[in-house]
Image (cartoon, rainbow, N blue to C red):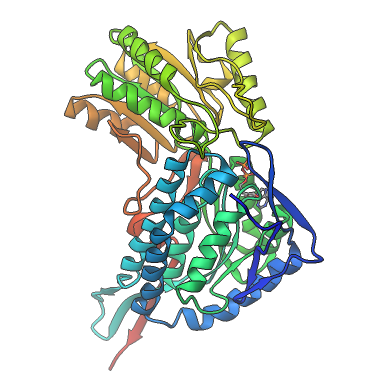
Amino acid sequence: MKLKSKTNSIFIDCQWHHTDGQETETVYNPATLEAITEVAYGGKAEAQAAIQAASQAFKTWRDMTGRERSRILYKAHELMLEDADRLGEILTTEQGKPLKEAVGEVKGAANFLLWYAEEASRTYGEWIPSSNKSKRLLVIPQPVGVVGAITPWNFPSSMITRKIAPALAAGCTVVLKPAPETPLSAIEIVKILEKAGMPDGVVNLVTGDAEAIGNTMLESKDVRLMTFTGSTAVGKYLMRESANHVKKLSLELGGHAPIVVFDDAAIDKAVSLALASKFRNNGQTCICANRIYVHESVKDMFNDRLTKKVAELKVGDGTEEGIDLGPLINEQASLKVQKHLDDAVSKGAKVVSGGDKWNGGLDGYFYQPTVLANVTDNMLVMNEETFGPLMPVQAFSDEDAVIDKANDTDYGLAAYIFTETTSRAVRVSEKLEYGIVGVNDVFPAVAEAPFGGIKQSGVGKEGGHHGMDEFLEMKYVTMGID
Ligand code: ADP
């Protein structure tokens, strides 16, 4: 893929700002470590201008009908789907995931535009029967205001539409700061919205200094809500700093997802879905399986089939046909995988497959899909997010004990269970302290359902009609009548 040496990446009040003469930063292809392009390195001034444009645009965007707003979102959905292959290629080039996953992500991202185009006309209020005959009580949903959206590199496309589609549908305006590793998918989404007829200032994009842009959003009284997906450390920082202006917050943070395979599970299904959950995006998703608990009576069967399937996985440049695992995003990510692996081995874990970097002649940070046995609870991999292709498998024998183990973490994003018994599925789902539970399913992120964590995995929901509520205030109007 050939791109220009410089790409305009700051979009304020419907104007693309030229990078000429501006400070820039390089975007790399993580498979080859080649420079793809340079984007602008904006900061406080650009963030302030973007917030001002969004504040101005809010005055008119909020007064449009839901139907008027939805027309633009429908159009954007159409444009995105038409262009999914090209957008997928851009995504793989800057992020590394296999092309089929990238195109799948783009289509999933487009689904959020469609879903919230539909929701835009359905922000119902309430008429509350008053206990006083001479009063009438109404609840009117109204948009929160300007939204500051900060997004990560692991899903450069869908994390953006999952935030901005409901914001726009609700009548909010947006300042978006994408991850420095993956600004190109963000630029493409903004271009699509521009083409779909988004009025000036409604969506603004600022790439650059994360801290300066984030702090400018935090310091602005006009930014009424911060929506963030990323690390728990940055999420906690935003939460603390939001207190100064009592901003609303929506946070999607880390996770440490357990998969529990019970003795009544359909083993082939459990093996292929555990594998899909662990190695999707090379283990770099916040809902990826982090630890696998398998009932001791099916452990050998599970491990044998798993080992065979893992051996079939192909590592390489995500743009090539048949690749299952692309590169990790950067060197730090690779060092973390190594640290977790070394820690586990030093504490007695056995490497069943993989166990080393992958060297296929590419410069990127690749790692072999790795399965560990003999794992114990004191290992880093069982407690911290690895964000890489490391899969620890542990046996269990008792249902209550494994639920306790699954819950024994500060995180609470996603957990998965495999069982063919309905009553167990219900019983265990209810006891798992997680925002999301997958029963014989590891792909919970869809436009129509509420995705979000509890405990230190975040606050708020994205997706579904619940996702729209984040961007609405419920105004209570009480009327005295004669
Ligand atoms: P990761 O380690 O996965 O990159 P981060 O939380 O660092 O996770 O990044 C997620 C997003 O948050 C990115 O867009 C990043 O630029 C942004 N970010 C990082 N630090 C800050 C900060 N101090 N204030 C605001 N945004 C930040």
